[in-house]
Amino acid sequence: MTSGNGLKRSIVLAGTILVIVALVMGLAGAVFVVRGKPQQVRTNLAESSPGVAPSARPSGAGIVPSSSPSAAPQTGQCAAPSDFPATGVRVGLARTFTPGPVVSFGLPFATGALADVSTLRVAANGAPVAATTRVLLASYGPDGAPQGPRSVLIQLPASVLQGDCTEVEVTWQGETPVAPPAPGPSPVPYSAVSAASDKVVDTATRSIASQGGQATLVETRREQRVLFAAREPAVMATFPSGYLASTGILGHAVANEQIGPDLAGLRFMADQTTPFGLSAIYQESYALNPTAVFGPNDTNEKADINGYEG
Image (tube, rainbow, N blue to C red; front, top):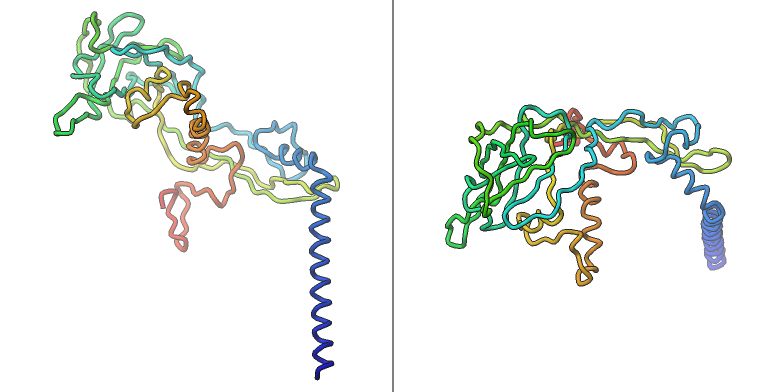
């Protein structure tokens, strides 16, 4: 019995050693392949990425480059408005869609900057404009007493737009305020100043295939899918650098351009906030996995999924 048990132990030990040797050889071979062809691997990955022109990609079967553009039009490159004084701000207006008869945007204020919304004056090209205003958010002190508006809705006639990029001047509490024109009409709803703009994402099914003797990442199916239904302002408002931070509407903040050496260690957070936010709404530089995308009409009772909101 003793010799039999010893033989069994020897067989088990030998088998274990063989398995370990096979694993080590396999890992060594993988390392050799990867280290031997790093440029080829990077090239193949780049060729299969959405950012590379279709003509630069391999012509192997199964790669289907996306040809249709995003559903939302690109915003024109409009220069940012200049610096702002304490009693006014220049607001940039950039067309994103064909606007209707009214242009609408919200304007935040620092606490106590604006005592009464009726003191707001809007001018375009030096001429006063009839503006419709409404308080969106008010400020209150520790005792609950109102301290003036913190955010105001401003609506203007679309005739103020001159081409794709326009600037208007909004002033308050100025020494020589622009004479007030006749008040504008009642505010129009958001649906009248916005356009339907479904969020569309690229999806792709990927696999590893042998092409020219090399293991290559390929896309076997590529398409665009609606992620969610949305609306965008027909005209986008932009503010001078630092204005939004100066109002404190989003809490204590500093404009990215104003980050000094004393805050250099936190710059990476400012640099990555925008990419992080875009990633949160699936706006990536690469095509997404189809199984990760749930559109407005996707349902799966077993998984308790009812569209993107489920």
